[in-house]
Image 1 (cartoon, one colour):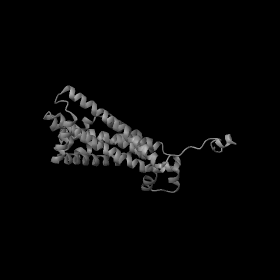
Image 2 (cartoon, rainbow, N blue to C red):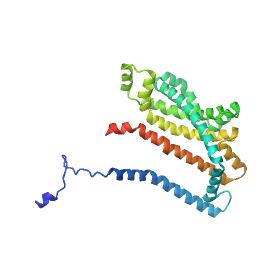
Image 3 (tube, helix red, strand yellow):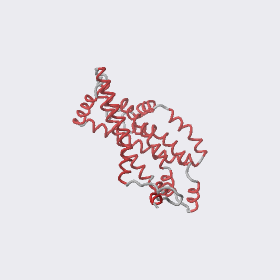
Image 4 (cartoon, rainbow, N blue to C red):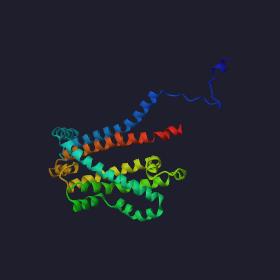
Length: 281
């Protein structure tokens, strides 16, 4: 009797039922798993940079304290926020144009092989052409105007988006197409109810690549052909041989990118893909 009472309770298959952790503990563990690794990397890089700056003792390698002082000065004068806002506006407008064009062309290329063959060389050319060439051509053609950065960003972001959307369209379940045909869905209904939900993973992957390309191109456009923005300020700091200023603008740029990635893209991705997790339970 003692042995029987000491045996653990088992399920139908003779297995011990799993121990469930409280929801709060699992969420805390998940948050720690997301935050701690990148935080550890940032701390390691900061310590390594400060050690290198102390050993070299050169204005070409300023300490993080000097860079932080530059950031505080820029923020106090208002130049930091104004130029970040200008650059971010240009990137968002250009990316919006690229997103609309990529959704239309990507779905068309994924659905029709003749359209794909017709547009494939142009997409490939857009992928392999360096961002510097796109920036220079837009500066030459459009000069100092709003069309210049918007078109340059759109040309940089659209190819990566088109490739991902085209591949995503091919992976869509054919039964969804049959359902849309049977119920005679219109073009807008198909886009809103079928394509966008089904293409969400491809859209977010392409968006990350497109925004990364957009940031690189917008800096080049602002360096060569604009009188405002982060790229213009980087060029000024470079001309003044102020390495701390260059690093300050670069860090501010990186912080904006991090906020967009973790605060916007990943939040939207979790909300959009929530139905997939719920259906898998």
